[in-house]
Every structure is written in C-alpha cells, then in structure tokens.
Amino acid sequence: MKKITVSALVAALFVLFQACSEKIETDLTKTAFIPKPVSIAATGTAFEIKKSTVIYVQEGSEQLLHTAGILAAEIGKVTGQTRVQTVSEAPSKGIYLAIQENDDLGKEGYELNIGKKLITITGTNAAGCFYGVQTLLQTLPVNTSLEEPLYLATGTVRDYPEYGYRGAMLDVARHFFTLEEVKQYIDFLAMYKMNALHLHLSDDQGWRIEIKSWPKLTEIGAQTEVGGGEGGFYTQEQYKELVQYAADRQIMIVPEIDMPGHTNAALASYAELNCDGKARDLYTGTEVGFSTLCTDKEVTYEFIDDVLRELAALTPGEYIHIGGDESHVTAHDDYVYFVNRVQKIVEKYGKKVIGWDEIANAELVDDATVQFWADVKNTTMGVEKGAKVLMSPAARAYLDMQYDSTSQYGLHWAGYIEVDHGYNWDPATLVEGVTKENIIGIEAPLWSETVSNIDEAEYLVFPRLPGYAEIGWTAPAQRNWDEYKTRLAKHGKRFEALGIDYYKSALVPWEE
Ligand code: NGO
Image (cartoon, rainbow, N blue to C red):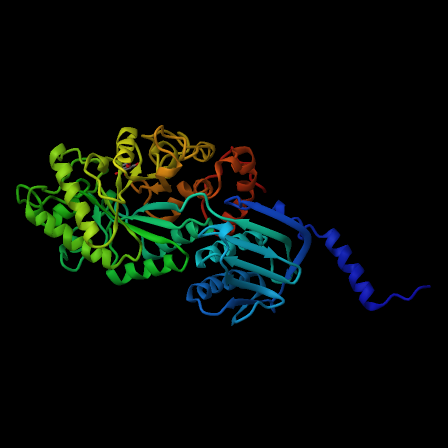
C-alpha cells in the first residue's frame, strides 16, 4: 500500500473540507456588492484571513492609516485582533493599502486585488483606498465565529463612481440627534461609499449649532423640538468632532442654515431679527412656510455674516447650504434681494453656495448649486443661469416618505416610495433640460418630523439608503432592479448584525 504522508493527508482533508463547507466561496463575482462595482474578475481560489494577517500601509499618509485602523477594527471582529504596520515597499503577503496614480480610475477610483497570499488595495487617492476597503469588507461573511477559518474569494475589482457627490441629509432641527446618533448615520453612509452628509442645522423648531457671537440661538432656540421634547445642540467642539469623524470616513459635512424662511427658532431667540421687533414663541408643530427673517433690516445681514463666518471656520468642506425653501411669507422681491446678499456672504468666507431649488429665483453666483427637490421650473431656471444641480427629487429620493400606507413613520405628501421606486430612476434623465453635465450628484434627505431618534430613523433609511448610494456610484446601464434586489436581499443579514431596524419590504427576496 502506498504510504500517505502527513502533508498529503492535510491537503486532501483541506480539499474535502473546502468542498463540504458552504462557507468557502471562491467565486468573487457572487459577492453581493452594493454599490455595484464597475468590474469584477474572479480567479477562483481563496485567501485565508488569520489572526496573524497584518494590514500593511504605505508610509506617509495619515488618512491611509485611519482607513487601515477602520479595516483592522472590522477584521478584528472576526479574528480577535489585527495588526497595522506602515511599510515603504509592498509586502508579499497580508493586506496592503497604497495610493497609486491610475488615470483609468479617476479621482476616487480604486483597484482591489485579492490574491491567495496578498490582498492589495490601491486607490488613486485616500478616498479611493477607503472605498476599496469598504468593498473588501463586503466580501467578509456575516456572523462568522472566531473559531472558524475565514476565506475570501480571490479576484480583482476595479471601480470608480458615476457622480462626485453622493450624499444623504439628516434633519437634526425637527428632532435633535445626539453626536453618537449622527456618527452612526455617518457609518451608514460610509459603508455604501457615500461622501457627503448634509446637516439641516436650523429650522422653525430648533437651532442646533453653537454660534458664539449669538449665544441665545442655542440658549433659547435649541431648547425644544417637534412634539415639545427637550431639543439640544452641538457645541462647536462637538461639531468639530463630527467633522473629523466624517472626514476619517471620507465624508464631507455640508452644513445648512435654512433662511429666510424656516427661521422661527432664531426669531424666538432674538427679537431684533423680526420686522416688528417682537420675539416669536418657540414652535413645536410641523407646519412650514410661516416664518421669515426681516430682509430689509441691516441687523439681519450682520447676524448672517456672523453665523456664516463661524460656520465656515468649522467647515473644511467646500459648501455651505443656505436653505431658501418655502419662504411663503417673504415677498418675492425681498426673497431675491435676500438670497443675492446671502450668497455674497458665503462667497466672502470662501465657500460655494448650495440652496434648495427656490434659490434659482435669485441671481446666482458662480459655482452655485441648486438642490432639486420639488420644482422643475426652478431647477431648469437654475441650469440656465449656469448653476449645477444636486438631485433630491422628493418623490424618489426623500427618505422621510413612507413606503406605503402601512408605514410606521414618515410622511407621504410626495407619494409613497417603495424600495423599487426609490431605486429605479436615473438622475440624468429624470428632469428634462437637466443632464449629466449639469449634475454634481444625488442626495437622499431624511427630514425628521416623524422620527425622533436613530432607531426610528433606521426604519426609513434602510433598506433605501444603499439604493441611493448605488444610483450615485454605479452607471445607469449597469443598474437594474431585478438584479439589484437579489444583492440587497443579502444585505438584510448585515443590517441585522448591525442591529439596524430596517423595513422588510415584500419586494425584496430577503435571505433567511
Ligand atoms: C420639504 C420641506 C421641509 C420638510 C420636508 C418634509 C423641503 C426642501 N422643505 O422639503 O421643511 O421637512 O419637505 O418632507
């Protein structure tokens, strides 16, 4: 009888084990990536992640180190611990993150190469590397235990986004969300390669950011919220912490001060901002369109100058959002005069203007962006005036719209948005006269009249958010609902593992 060596036996057992174990997936193309990458090529073997697997980082980039830290924390959950080390040259095994110029991949692109011994993630910049890491994380099985060996299918993903702005909004004014809750929201965006978080920081019901030169905004204006709860605000120190937390995940925060309407909280805090010089009462209802700053008082512009100066100093990102929606009690000419002046203040502090589509009624400064939410005429007028467009059509992309009439939370003034309806549209063809060249990207806003904390918000955010992320990232020709829903179905387990209270839409074949 032929002698069987120990190593041959081990090899045979390994093959047997591989064949028997459903855990080992060697076909990378079967991974349910969201957003869908530009290209995936499988090589049919597997990389084993062990406790000893080291994450190597090309030396010289703080941002890469942060990204490696985030990757190590995630892999550490399945291996117990994972070490990060900077190196000056590519290693021969382990996981390696590096920045490498690659004209084919554009500014945020990356290549993820999973070999049998070495996983390499190269991004054209730090953002690209971060996205490559997110893709790698989606290849990790959900719910693995520390005892089981962990294999990843090998192959190459090459990838880059369709749009440069891929965002979501959180309304922290109608209901206040704590720092921890906003960080959780940021984590959701990061998982799906979104890169902008628009914070709606002020509205009739609350002012949520400390402004040192106008302290009563928070002493008075932050003290309540919809329904009469206690409200809250971010100190400038806390806000900086959020900005940094987001930046570590390649997300820019776009702060919004909504004006001249949606300003009751400010009008309650300072009597002089009202035309009649009388402070308003705090407001905890959900009506819109009843408040306005006094557009012909100089103090109004001194106020805005101070607010925007302090806000710009807290904002490394390029944009400041000036709101401008639903100013129903501001006369048209006053509105135009006001928006013209406020845009100049934003420019003075070195930032680009974004506003809801109504701002197109003003003369727009260069580089202004109009956020389409409701009015096609405003939006096309904005384009004619040379503005860019951010696509947030309420009837498609509002995260606060209900799924159907049985939805627990949400509104339905713009209709119901089931998961397929939220996914099945193309920003570049939705509005006649607004084409890809005009569009900076897409943003899904979550207004918070009906949700008061992150757990309630999760029901509206998931499972629609990944779909908006994919619309922003993946070319329309590569997207189709029937295929997408099978990938989304596999993310249900991920949501559960993260404790996300998602809406289990009957349209998605969720995996048990
Ligand atoms: C509108 C309104 C908001 C509401 C939201 C609710 C815009 C831009 N202004 O969208 O104040 O909260 O609808 O869906």
